Length: 246
Image 1 (cartoon, rainbow, N blue to C red):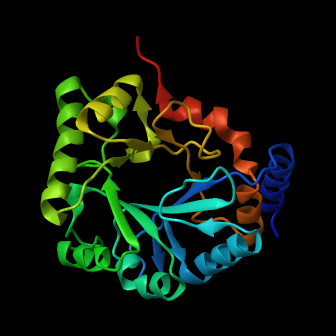
Image 2: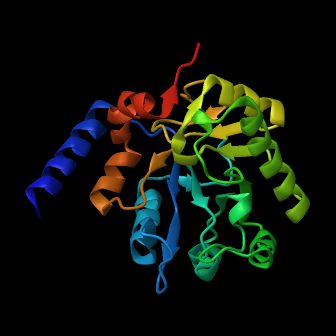
């Protein structure tokens, strides 16, 4: 193990002690692969399986939507890469529900799921979708009209394509402002998923959802994160992702 990796694990271990909890949490990935890999952000299915085993050992239930304050985990994926479709038999075999945030303008592009594939997954009862905007550009730097259109168009497009309500939004790269929050509410989004780590019931604002990035976490790091370790980085991430504008 390299010195850098050792230091990283020590930091996570310290965080897991300082912020130890069994609170319900949302975790997120970008894709999953066994053979073809569509993004460097993809998680090997063998590592993903180990993550699921850790959740089970720790007494966490994987749920489509969190309702209890403790011991529930919701799994989300960003962007809509094809690896999810190609490996969805794993989710079906283990009855793992997931929520995937789709970039409406990328559906059918190379490396991304096609409309028919998303429709097929929706029929399994284990697959939910939300909006990841039209273009995946940062929302915090858009002007008022562009921001409104980006949020509304993605929602309307996905609802028309798949015939399901789209009331959840995930910010591209986690970037947001107070205006983004308000415009998303006006567009009809009931929940807005951030990239801020922490417990589900301790959001930055009402209607926002914390999430922990775990896509490349080793078994040890994943275990620490589920214990609450990444709360150690909350202020750092908040400073990087939230822009206060008067």
